Amino acid sequence: MGNKIQFIDRLRLGFAVSVAKSVTFIVRSLRLGAASVLPGSIARRIEPRILELLSQQVKNGVILIAGTNGKTTTALLLCTILERKGYRVTHNSTGANLENGLMTALLESTNLLGTLNTDYAILEVDENIVPRVLKPLQPRIILCLNLFRDQLDRYGEVDTISKRWTKVISTLPAETVVIPNADDPTLSNLGQQLPQRVLFFGLNEPANYLEAIPHAVDSIYCPKCGHSLDYKGVYLSHLGDFTCPQCGFTKSKPTLKSSEWSQILVGLYNKYNTLAAATAAIELGVDEATIRDTINNFQAAFGRAEDLVINGKRVRILLSKNPVGTNETIRVVTQSTDKTTLLVLNDRTPDGTDVSWIWDVDTEKLVERGGTLVVSGDRVYDMALRLRYSQKSPESSINLIVEEDLRQAIATALEHTPENETLHILPTYSAMLEVREVLTGRKIL
Image (cartoon, rainbow, N blue to C red; front, side, top):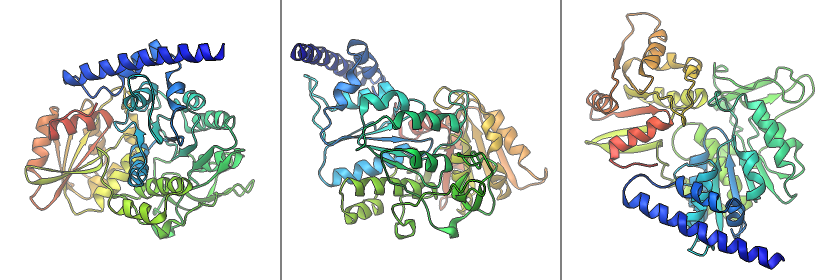
């Protein structure tokens, strides 16, 4: 009976894969998009267990990367490290991180019979669907990067997500390795509760403390007893060195000493991405020399501190989709000498329809430095109003340009960018895809 069921599963899987690959061919041939979601959606209708049937064929296991910020960059770094060691890696590189996107990524690496020939599958997963995909994926390693407020209209508060994660991860096999962020109180607590093997990553660099806890802070209360945490210092948002004076809960010890590692790209948030990927790679047996060399030669994922040259001028795209991420990209901008910035705010489904989060962003720091700020996007006037309220006086040196048409906004921003400076573009997710299409002439999704 078991062989019969297995044979039927194989036939259904083969049919689902054939249909999915046909859909991929048609979509790409007609230049309708990258076919990063639709093939998986159709294949699942034919074989509902397709995610399980494909993931169990991955030779060395699935590596799941979850969190609010940094998934794409961390996944690309770890993927690059493993590929440099000669491994075949399947990765949802377009950033399609819901169930259909995961299925499509795995389908991409199969043959027409539904056989998946890959050593590792590195899958970045939207934090809200983690509980739904852990059972079928049965990951070998789970990287928990961070939990910040993001799209409150979809997700709710971070403690709700962390409780769901803890409940489902604790049911996985004992040999599963979980790697949470030690500097995030919620995730540090998660790791301390799990029965599986847990490794932590985090910073131990007090020189990088912020001067004060930012407005966009999410979780400064003890996840065990609810008392306010004592911080020696914070690195970004609520990530930092903390203890609870009430119950004794404290930050977990990171596996790696962060000060001994360089980082990929700009921004302190990318140090976290570096340490997360490095910790996972070492756990997988990769030598440190390969890891460090990959870090030193890493190229950014699209839209994540990605540098382009347009009409002879340098452009840097810094994805800015929630309060914490935007505060960090503003920190990158204000640490430079460049004086032109383009902010693009959309409120579509990938961005979250609630844009009230922009009032938790420290835009005052961007306005204080002066220069030219160009704003565009579906909610261009919301962003313009936020920037106006960030001015200490009407006579401030800011040159605010409001342009509804994105293509014209980009052209205007480039015109105001001197030859020897960089234009920084801070877009939300859907806006980032539009910006890249305008700049490069190619769609991502």
